[in-house]
Length: 115
Length: 115
Image (cartoon, rainbow over all chains, first blue to last red; front, side, top):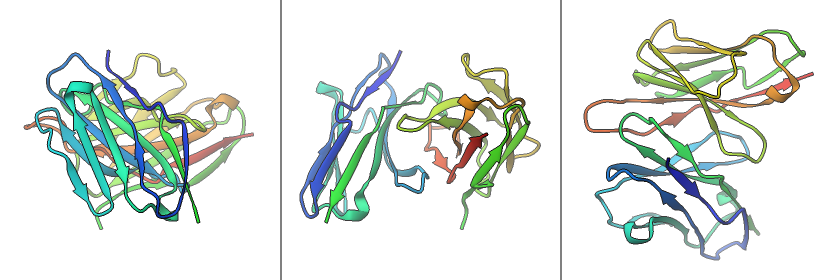
């Protein structure tokens, strides 16, 4: 069965610091999809990124960047120059096969960015 | 804007009194999901509909039922809420098929309180 681990339960940083959220996954499938979602205090899960298992290119979107390494089964998320609005719980998730079957969330990392 | 809408955002019910939560979407997605999220935990999948086909997770209690009368709407019925059912309930949609799994888009959630 697949599994997602986010070892960091809570992280606190001061505004403008860079922060990396770790995600390690387990799966037996060769085809799978990895996701990051943000959940601010309002509760809505906001989609950030999807990456399929055949695409190991790193991605940058503004202050956000993602590092996917199949060799270590990791899909880490870095926020550069963090801001108070980045404070949220961040979930890494894994999906095998089609249409979200076996869609599994990690336990989440609570990020607090202090002014 | 196309979106996933959940009503109400906050619902209070009494122990044992049936309650229905609703979800609607303007994305025309063929898959709709219901998740339960308790405090400081990851979302847990309850069930999903692929078009009209209902798929229940093995550990979803019988107390939870769902209806999908058409593509746009999906309801979560809790027949006899217990104190342990107090949680955030998240609806998500996905356009599935063809090239593998797509992304789940979440509504803002309904926070259920059981008195």
